Length: 189
Image (cartoon, rainbow, N blue to C red; front, side):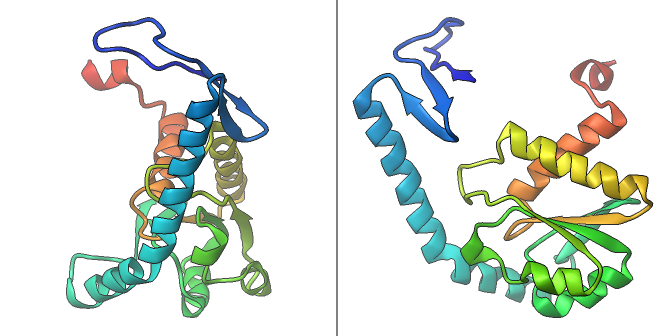
């Protein structure tokens, strides 16, 4: 995959090209590689520092704001929401969840795979850094395949990240676009 940096109003490449190598973005310019790695490390450190304060903020919002829900049903087979607690697993099972897609890094994951398995729930873990990072195309495809497998068996999938607004929403939107054939042309006609 090639990523090109575009100039203002320009449709052609400007500067160095980058390519994905072994899951890492590498640039042909050594200084750019260092800058990208430093940015990724800085964002990762910030995400770790902010995890518990922002989780607490979401818990308090859920408790005190009537219109703030921990998860929402998107369609018959999709629940989209925030990181579940171990106490939520039984409730998810009661809602018909047979698959969970986790888009959290390990330090953000509060429910171990073994607890899901003990309740007969399949668990797909796609570690994705919070803030400024989206799942890769390969990971999006893995998640969509997982959701399709569950829907083909009449089961619900719970897709979550920390707050249910960024990484998990990306997956659900991609699923909906593919499932319901949404497109720019269809929406403008």
